[in-house]
Length: 296
Image 1 (cartoon, rainbow, N blue to C red):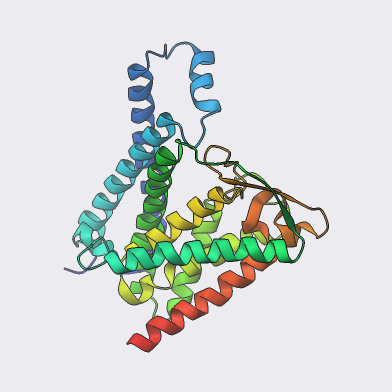
Image 2 (image 1 turned 90 degrees about the vertical axis):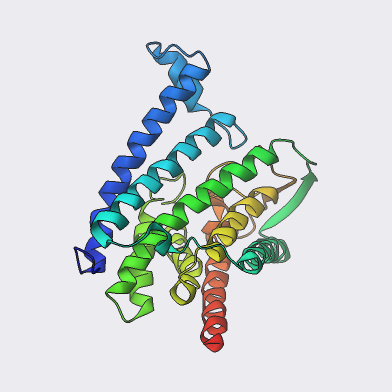
């Protein structure tokens, strides 16, 4: 059946408040359950603030909250696909049959991308190695949390929003631009994102590198594993993730030398605030496009 709303851009815009509301409700329910399980008095404001104000990436509380966030996202997707799009939920690109290769390539590509940037930044004198921190057991919880967070953003911004916009645009780049703009704006409150012009530009460009394969395959597993690896390996190599501290699982410590401008080193926003990262993102987006275009 045809969608109740034919214009895919309009469907995407309508979906955003639906998603935010269901995600907020799910997160609220999750918060209540977590506090009850931990014996937190919900009438004690200081106790509630203490629980949620300093949650690290390796916290079971954050993992639980991320799980409830994903559940809220799936509820919004089910409502939208069932009653607006009138198509199966799986149509957003959840089929995993014969997709193991794409998962591994996505993860490997992310490692090569982040490790390569680390070496380039060292070579240009933007950062210097300051120590090896060793293995941290919290990495297991961090991995699960980061995967869920990446999966959550991919099912929303690529699986539904980009998918819907592609229905109304013959030009993949216009659809990518619309979904990438919403993706960047959802990170507009991150620490240091407005420190200069690079972080928001890189977040916008990240929507392209994460979404370009989806415009060919309509499958989420390559972008999901690339997105997960992007965040995980950044933290492992000691970079902030979009301005957020990663002490809970980093294995390598480094520091900015101060010898180059923040737009080169990334400054307080981390590697995603560097024009070197932005340039590599644009180049790799083209290379992914070229690869899939030649496979057709």
